[in-house]
Image (spheres, rainbow, N blue to C red):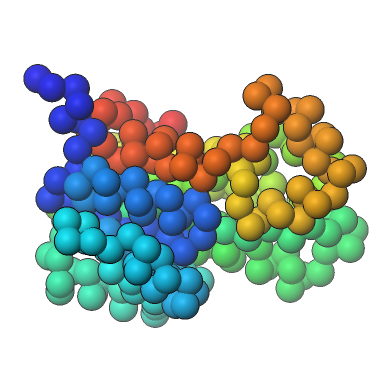
Length: 246
């Protein structure tokens, strides 16, 4: 047995929602490098197609599909397309997410609903639809991008909606893992700390926030998106075959 072969994804089909974002882009690249065909799904068509131009080569397969993950209709349409073209799906990575920094007493219903819909509800409906494929196949692998903020209260920025949504993502991950383990479907989550992406740009520009961020981080630096992608590759591969609900 070759341990390196455990990390190869040859003949696998992977779907990365939110693939046009900083973390999503790197996860797409990691999965492709391991041999998987990748479907990058995102609402941002311009950025998605830009990534395709960067990544595409003779020996790499990536395609873009437009997806509004808050729309059940859009999710079902993508599911039908994947089944028609690829006949199967092996790996699902959920990278869609947003954060709005507002003091709890100032949060509007619209803002609260937006964050919960994008971070939590959309993830559930994507898992539900594509989980049906995995159930029929009796095999599948789901990786959800949660957050350190789903486990602790990162400070000093106010983000009750974000924290609550990401805590729910981690509990959803555990729930699906327990429910689907008997069907040979693994479900895990990654809980990054602060990552050098567009989402953290506002905080990085605020010295009064950034000081706390660095002080709370043992390595005293932000993570690079590629470092999160490496964890995703491990979870997507047979190298993590006994990990679920983690």
